[in-house]
Length: 114
Image 1 (cartoon, rainbow, N blue to C red):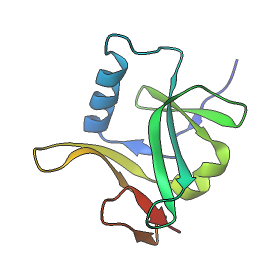
Image 2: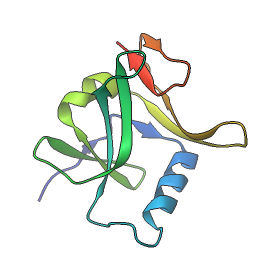
Image 3: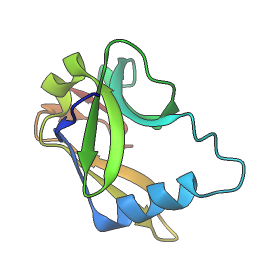
Image 4: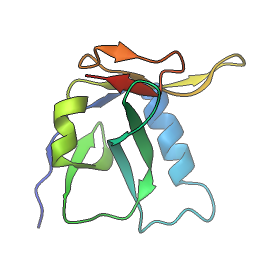
């Protein structure tokens, strides 16, 4: 049995509701996990990863307010304390990332530098 570690990231109630809605859609692959992370690229150096994926040996399992997710342990350094929100408005729709570790961010909010 794997132990879940306290969550390095937080989700707003809106983000949790939207993620659970996506996971309850017909045809959702229940073998996939919610993945949070970073990857190289984007206009500020690193881009956020938020999606559904299979678990690998580098992943750690976490849980926040009943929402389980996976993240590579090494990504905690970049994402610790980040809050993920869902904006459902007409002008801006999608997930947003509020990262206290980012020294620079791009205009679209999907990439950052440290």
